Figure (cartoon, rainbow, N blue to C red):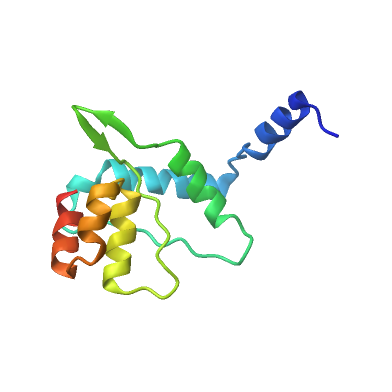
Amino acid sequence: MLTEAKKAKLTQFKAVCIEYAIPKIIINDFEKLRLHHDLAGEKPCMMLSGDTGCGKSALIKHYYDNNPPHFADGRRKVPVLLSRIPSNPSIESTLKQLLHDLGQFGAKSSKRLKHGHEIALAESLVNN
């Protein structure tokens, strides 16, 4: 049986991210996109692909954990949006998931937008 100290060490070990050359390049590309997004007319984006189990999700989670949502100027800032789109997505379910991941679906707004129109959901997403 693991002691609490050993459990803590195991948890710490699992959270270690070793930045090899390729993941470091990807993280640097993420940073460039995030920090220089105002320079382009179109909003830049990046698609990360690879074989199953190669570490895509772990890399994204590592980047997200190092750029967490926070409050500044009385508003919630989300420097990196981490979202999982539903497996059978519709426009409405995708918009709702993105709003939820932005922290915009509380008890009241969830009821109000539960059967909301796609246009209202899209406007809410753009405003956020």
